[in-house]
Length: 79
Image (cartoon, rainbow, N blue to C red):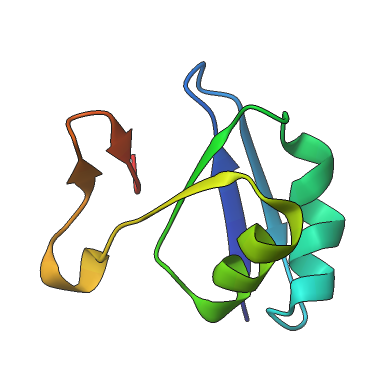
């Protein structure tokens, strides 16, 4: 079962259990939470790539499977 977790720099957090990890589901749950000036940090899943092409937030991809959790000492994933 896919789980979508969003967290901001002020420790605001939201999580959603999704039936399917699709663009439509991610848009439905994530977009209402995002400000226009955000930087979206993700694992680079194709759904996030499509979301950023469609909605144009700045996007930083981090490859957690090879241990990359931080970029430029500022952008990070997984708390």
